[in-house]
Image (cartoon, rainbow, N blue to C red; front, side, top):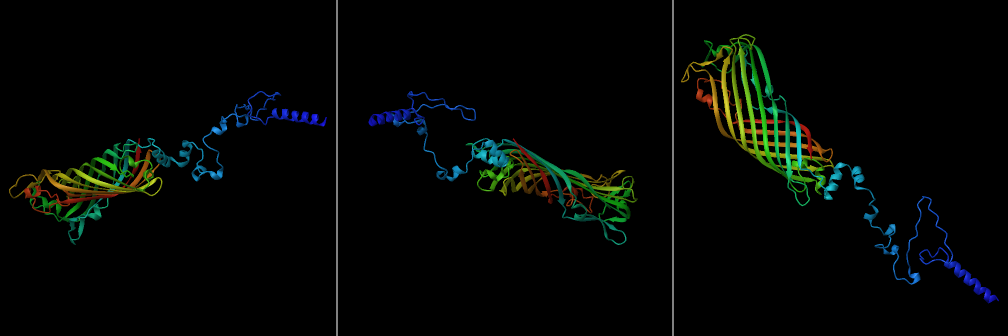
Length: 451
């Protein structure tokens, strides 16, 4: 009886075990109906997944075991896996800022670079004046009263502007364009500077070879009551260049926008430029004298004008170096040197309200002193250096500021073409000196836009 009871109990336990939820992967019908699985608190029902295990003699592997590999514990993860959060690229770029995001997308093969650019700068520059020429002295003491020199005219600042545009190309293989064709203009606004002096003035220039209104021209410049010097000049430059940057970046073309040095593992960048350049430079000197104190309306007042115009056509080469000292800030230096054919014209006149002065001796006696030199060619050279810094606001906009120096040699300036006697020698006056020089320097600031 005990044995029969024991067998009955064992059979009941076995049947209960077969009906238990412990056999969660059993696909066969149960002897006892299984109550429905309650829904999770979130409201989403949990569906039963059909699977088989080796417990039932089936060799198929369950879907859980068909995953690529076993789950790893945090201790088994690599440092890279530990530090890689699941964050969308857009959110990551927003956290990093546009400049770093550009570096990221360049590395990822996306087209973050540009194909066109345009820039504009405001200029404030002055011309150094190394030569000096005293035009007037005091009648009593002989001291210099008017001086066409650096102290009076060598530190006058003039405004101007610069504008440039370019088309970028090159690169290839999914890399950013590293070359560009660009057109650049910059120039200074013409200005007029004046220095005056009054009472008991005599000129150091001898106008005795000229007559004006029936009187020797020297009378207007001796014991004068008012004298003045006017000076003006203008400068314009147009360039058509091919520019290029090294693979690590550089200061030219589309490299003026975006991430600067972040595009390369090295903070240094190098570039080159080559092209054609046209420079127009004109210089004006006007020396006026009046026996009375009214220079503008006195019929006896005389003016001595010297005007030169230089048109330089030539070829230039240059190079640039940039250094990315911060994520968005880049320093650069650019140097250019050119050689030109300079077409020079000059004009010299002595005139007043009564007309032009007349030569009173020599081979050209009786002719008016109005000497115009036809265009003559001469060799000229130029050199330009820009030192500056550029800040990338975003991937398309940058702002920059810097210091510029430009020098010209082999040009006709008024300094080397003022005559102090022998106005009857027209041939000598017409043989204009073209061995002058010009040195401009000043600051600039502006912005660059790329698209």
